[in-house]
Length: 536
Image (cartoon, rainbow, N blue to C red; front, side):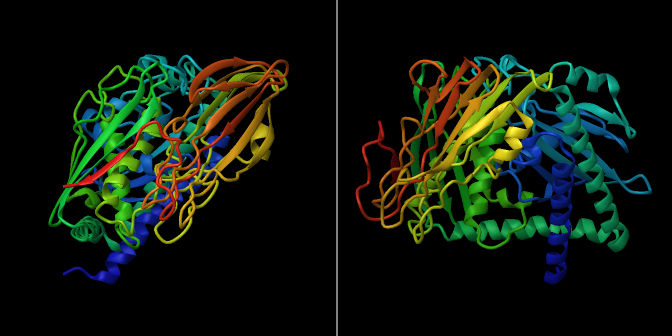
């Protein structure tokens, strides 16, 4: 019989290990993207590769990381002291800048006990544009693709592998420092797990890991039973793929029967030429995130949450692309739209619980070039906050990262200290949230001046098709981007671009707000196309 108090103790123990790994990674990393924005995630897995616990880090990382761990276990032999590194989106990864490390945890007797893993977004991983998030029509243009390989064996770093990696990225010192931070975080996690085993014994620790799986599955089943049986459908659209193709459909059908859920993305458009394709791990991660949102309380973030859920993701589509499709934006943009579609479908079933759409984009900005003052390359990457959708009983928050991202904006002081950039304007974009009984949150205005010539890239969405309102609330204002040259007239920019900019030029980005909820008009005229949410 499971001791409920002891179960909670183990939930806290395993979660604290993942959280401490994250603290170690953040404090020892070099790049502002990890140190300041906290674009990383850490997790603990049992000896079979099932996730036991995760830190409260990046949702898009956490739901997909189990596939990376599975790929590492299946393709590599992991002995004591070994570390596997990978970023291949077609082997459980997300996009190339997200570098994952996996390490086994062995006991004193030589028995395999656990695995620990972390994933961090590196500000550059090579490719045709600084920041590795620019325009691309195949994955080879997006950067260095790393299959599951050994970075360490028996506790010793594979120096040849490290040299190969660092020779193919911009900002070598920063990349090397962040990789070292990831290695250190794995050691912290392994040490804490061994302390748990030493105190309670592995038999009990492993038993309660299984109980956590079962408990999470029970909570998921209970949440599903609160949704009326039926079939719920919805569709929404990405603006474009940056390569001339517009209004790319994502369609979902959610079938509820008792305590089981079937999520079927059949009918979504074919994969795109531009870099907005999501791999299967991303789509499953979005479903995992929505399940966590449906479960009240502090549920264990374990593999059990998806036990009663079947996910159908047709190959060759925008939600399960095949190589060599480019995928940089699938992780950051398409993942957000998948969440929007899932919530839109569920709004017909749970009208009193589902919020209006949040900004629906991460506004991925990369700026890279040569810093004369410091005598080195620089590569700046940031996602920019926007508005949260209004909730059925309260307004949405302004200037916040939502849904599949849980990061922060880079502080102005850190940005200006690390890069030849100056923030000219940073404020809330008043009035960008949708109207309704409860207003959607507002986006932000971020204006950055270049103090050196640079390549500037933006990968964003919700520039044409605005975040939707619900229950009569109006849509939010879509986002926009503008180049303000040092000399000449302003130039409006599309949602996806890569341009050469001069010293003294300024880039102004206005992010979308969140949709309104309840009352008022359903549509404020910003949408090119109505979305559909149906129950049958």
